[in-house]
Amino acid sequence: METSRIARLLDEMGTILEIQGENPFRCRAYHNAAQALGNLPEDLSEMIADGSLAEVPGIGETMHAKIVQLATTGRLPAYDKLRKSVPSGILALLRVPGLGPKKIKALKDSLDVDSLADLRAAAEAGQIARIKGFGAKTEANILEGISFLEKSGGRILQHEALALVSPIFELVRNHPKVKRAEICGSLRRRAETIGDLDILFSADDPAPVLKEFVGLPQVMKVLGHGTTKASVMLHSLTRPDQLVQCDLRGVEDRQFPFALHYFTGSKAHNIAMRKRALARGLSLNEYALSGEAKDVPCETEEDLFRALGLAYIPPELREDAGEFAAAEEGALPDLIALEDLTGTFHCHTNWSDGEATLEEMAEAARSMGLSYLGIADHSRSLRMAGGLTVERVRDQWAKIDALNEKLGPKFRVFKGTECDILADGSLDFPDEVLDGFDYVVASVHSRFGMPRGEMTARIIRAVSNPRVTMLGHPTGRLLLSRDSYAVDLDAVIAAAAEAGTMIEINANPHRLDIDAAHCRRARKAGVGIVINPDAHSTAGLADLAFGVGVARRGWLSADDVFNAASPSAVVKDLDRRRKSLP
Ligand code: DGT
Ligand code: CA
Ligand code: CA
Ligand code: ZN
Image (cartoon, rainbow, N blue to C red; front, top):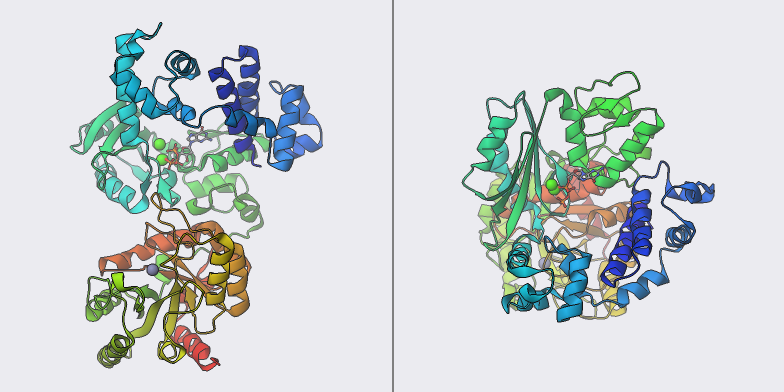
């Protein structure tokens, strides 16, 4: 188990014990150990191995045993037991601004409050004001805190984060006093979901920029406004009741590369980077890289990495997941870029549930600079989404042939289908129909509740079918709204490798399916990856950029991605697949 997770877990144990009214010394022991873990001078496993962990102040004998158990087995029965001893809703109360373990204990003891719903009911009924040490003011604060939490608690998707941050970022960047500016945080790293928005700029005097920022019309509430930093809440674009935090920081221009690196994160990457600096007798923070005598000047992030003996690590790889070793050995991948894509597959038209016509989709793809577009409307079972009958499929083929006459040879429309994987793993069209397509995307759209074993067997049967070219949205998840169905994705990846079937990165920002971690595993297994927008309109084609983000976070280079090959190589590969069919 990672060190940071062990620290969080111990912290949580201390907090639960506080809520239970345990001896304060015992509670502090957990918090102190958690804090000590956050500041270890060396790698935890090494410190366990050489015994030096036992010497760290703040880690006593009992804590030492617990940490070793967590680090080596990933489990701690004492934690599981403690977690079970409190109602799960009670930990959510900690997120209410102003409520700490002591107050939560008092609320539980006197009013039996153990969830947010209970808390709200008690506050609305005026019961909280009557508890000793609380009062009407605290009660009002708690109510405000709950409603704040409900509005701002959620994370948002990348496309929404971009839509919110872009106009503000443009204003900052174009401000006459601003020298350099960059979007930082999880959005720069292209994380799947975004907690809050971070913008950094450099200027001799940040104050006027911050002042304009807090006065913007989209700012709903100012959380803080100082001389170098301001934080505000913005209305989300999709959920009027949801608020999104945006942090703006100003630094001097010579500090910019350090601040840019720091506020890009991730936190785990930053901690590893700081450790690396320490190991070289330097200290790194958000403002400078300093030696004993003087600072090491850096103009850019590249300079900072170089000063620590590293090649430039792109933001998408900054998760402390092997990027330091690779950067040291010169083994970082040359990450794929949007411009590398030559075309794409898995797009819908108004023949099924898309908005645009065949011609409009092809024209949009062409004007994006792509050389081919794969049309994959739904298959016959998916009636809800206008799935095509065999007859309609043949009509569409004729239309595509005619369109290719018109657009060729510079542009090519491929005949495809997003063919349903039926409950038993067979496909929704008979072989003789499937043989008429240039390629087949196979996807699950039904019976999401199947047990894991059955679902895995179902999908493995589909990817092992020689008529399937690629697997569509392999887990079926919808970010922030629907979990993946139960499936053993590693077994699916192994089967796809065996059969030579490709796996899609579905680039729709609601899906991002498969995710970056499985991209890495798929590549390692030798599975071809294809980046598909699952576009249902011409605008949907632009989602390809989010898929490229996943591929980059998954360490993929252009060579790993099928639709980054030359158009002639793509045609050749599809032909080869069809000619080898039984
Ligand atoms: P988010 O907002 O939850 O999607 O994720 P981030 O990564 O944008 O996190 P955020 O906004 O809290 O902070 C931005 C960056 O600042 C983060 O990626 C790394 C850096 N940072 C924040 N807090 C700490 C910290 O306690 N230690 C270190 N080393 N870096 C931090
Ligand atoms: Ca953030
Ligand atoms: Ca932030
Ligand atoms: Zn689909």
